[in-house]
Image 1 (spheres, one colour):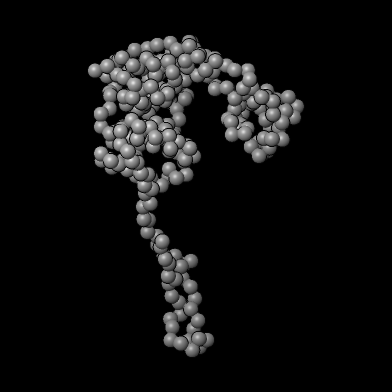
Image 2: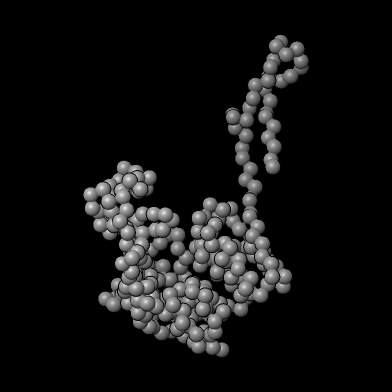
Length: 258
């Protein structure tokens, strides 16, 4: 069956420049061999929703009409890849505005910085001022992708896990799904994941819309971790001479758990 917009598909891919240099891949070993391995990344294939803009436009458009098992390649021009380079996205900023980020370091070309919530890279240092480029690092480049569509997902639980892994890089997610509710059990470490805090509403809206299930709950999982009683848990109790009451010399402090 031909793939359409809204389908959840699992893909493997290799992204290259014209000279053959690999800049992105779902193959862990290939990433290591080419010096682009990200220990926080998810390898082994990405799950994307066709037509949702979760990958570059040229690749997203190429999925439509294909079938599971398809393998091929295509060249993608800048305007359908990572954008045409925009000179207006290069700004001059005082070094003083970056002092909290620089700390004791000197600004230098290639240094990543953030200005007014925008992430960019220093392209030039001019005295006490720097030029910051807010263009995507691959803006203006034609790229080539080799990709395989491994499967079209039908199972709702796999769709949920795949989409969350795409956004957060975490695959170990518990799910409970009925006709009326998607319940996602969120591991405690995601509570400290900035990417999760920014994208969780987008994930919720995407799943409700694509799966046609009207309600979604995020449930935080807080596992109980027992701890051994240590010296800090021991408190001195007044002796019989000083208090006039029968009491042991020491007692274990009571703790309450909320």
